[in-house]
Image (cartoon, rainbow, N blue to C red):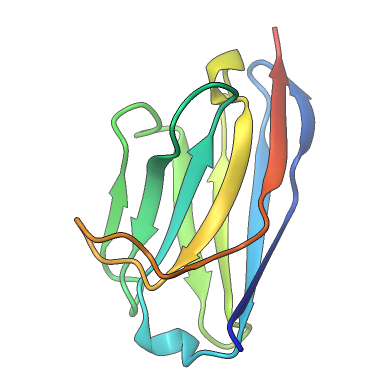
Length: 119
C-alpha cells in the first residue's frame, strides 16, 4: 500500500520561508519521479515542481521558479520542497504525488498540508 505523508505546512508572513517534506512508503521510492502540486480555494489543482527518480532533473511552474526548490533523499524515501520568498498567492493545500512524469497525472497522492501566507 502506497502512502505519501506530507508535513511542514503552516502560517508564514509574505517573504518568509517554509520547507515541506513528504515521506513515502509502499513503493520503490528511488525508481520514481516525485511531484508537488497545490490547490488554492476555488481553483483547480496545479503543478508546482517535479523531480526525476535520480534527482538529476527538476521542473518548476513558472510561478515558483527561482523561489522554490525540490529535492529528494532516496535513503530516507523523502521528497522536499523548500519555499522561499513566499507570496500570499502561494496560499494553498500542497500535495505530494507519485509517480511523477512530465505530462502525466500521478497515481498516488498524499493527504495534503496547508500553507498560508499572510500579507
